[in-house]
Image (cartoon, rainbow, N blue to C red):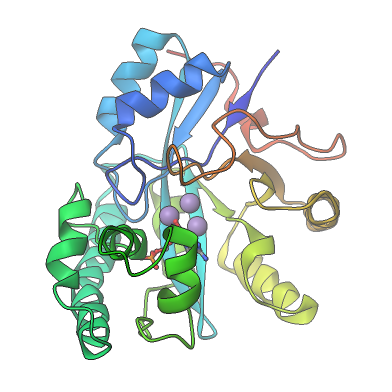
Length: 282
Ligand code: AMP
Ligand code: MN
Ligand code: MN
Ligand code: MN
């Protein structure tokens, strides 16, 4: 039985585990093919690939690219990428530069709200100083006793309309898709059910994604309901998109579902991994 999980984070971005620890957890859970898809950085892929060879599972190089589309933040997962591709390397590097500048603005807003030291605090939780993300701020705020847990910090401080939320411009959708294609990868629209978009805006997003050269869509992911999985399976079939399955795991205590614990793809879907054959088996 195959168990394929193509969306996971390590401490190279906002996950909690080292890449090798993530691979060992996935292997223990019976995952047969795993992708590491850290936000805007590929530095964990070497360690994960090596651990996968040791653990006897197939490893897929991935990344999750942060994008601004029509004023909304959306995420594009790139699967089976060449992490050394110059276009991808340059694109991700530009996004990371913007992250540090945004982190300074988040810390400034939090300081105005009476929470000092948030940049230094968040950086203590960011194992990779090139990627400071909102969960690092959330962990610091929990440490400071400002809120009970990470989800509560998000609700009170880090989402649109709250004190610690700042506007930010990520990559263009078309650029992100192009970098992934140039790197030989498959661009996949991540967790489409998680965006606060109505049906018609979501349709426009998928139109724009397909227009840009996008090839796949996450049908099964941790917070999709059964109805959403069916809806996106239908969308995938109607639009000729490949379907992906990924837990979006971030680490113990922060993610409800561990790698490999998701339901299977609905049977009508064409799996994104179908075209990969066995060639990349380690
Ligand atoms: P950033 O890329 O810095 O904006 O951080 C985005 C990350 O924050 C996502 O990838 C999730 O890991 C996490 N996140 C976003 N929204 C929430 C939420 N409402 N509750 C908990 N974590 C969240
Ligand atoms: Mn994340
Ligand atoms: Mn995401
Ligand atoms: Mn993710």
